[in-house]
Image 1 (cartoon, rainbow, N blue to C red):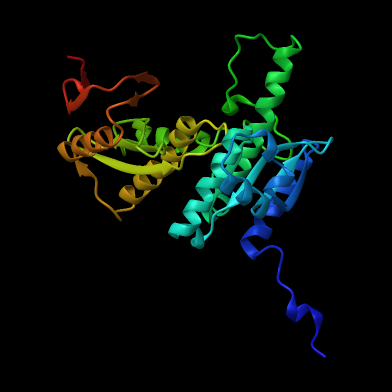
Image 2 (cartoon, helix red, strand yellow):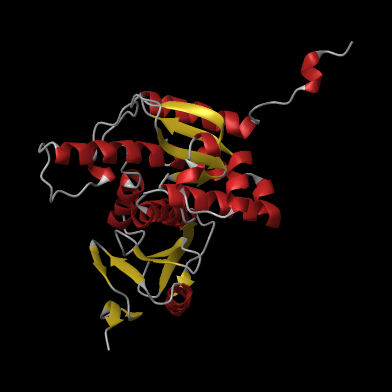
Length: 311
């Protein structure tokens, strides 16, 4: 007689199990509970949605990888782990159907991959950042409704302290340490800029893309690129990408200082920025130092520095 376990499947794969542990550790701090493999129809009231019969049938058959609920067992948001199989055309159609149901039901949905649970920024992975920010912002809004926080006050995760389960000062300010490293390199004369310039914008799929550059002298600069996929989740895409780019450009600067890479000529940097502008339809923002301005046309020379043509 065969052992029963040989006829059964794992409920969670290794990546999903890692995600579950991280979600459990965070949500416990906020009195929330994580459930795995929950049927969509058990979370979303399909009868309350104006959907096609095929979408209704899909909702009965499909499931969420994880659903986070409050202490009254009401859904707060869902999490989907998109592994390699999600690149297939069939799976992309299923993902689109699930996205539509979540959008209609106003259920926030985080879609992550291995990078969101493996990559670390000040010891924090991006999934943890998403979830911490979600709960803290909800608490901030509740405090505003209660009259504890002024209604015109803006929530900024970087200035939130303390954060449950996270050590250190301003733990959600991910770029705090790389920004300090860049200033130290500048003070030591290893680069001209003490902060990177950045271009951020959205591509045609709604993904936030960005490029950062840092002058090492009057003729050359380092460049770094990154992106954040579009989410059905209320996160600060621009702010998060800005912080990630700090890590990328800091690593490029270290590589340059150690002689492992070479900077680009400034005309090449300008061409790179313009390519990003074209990819975002010329809608976005550019950062120089601590100032944000709309982008028009830009260039660089030693006398003027980076300049912007508004005409």
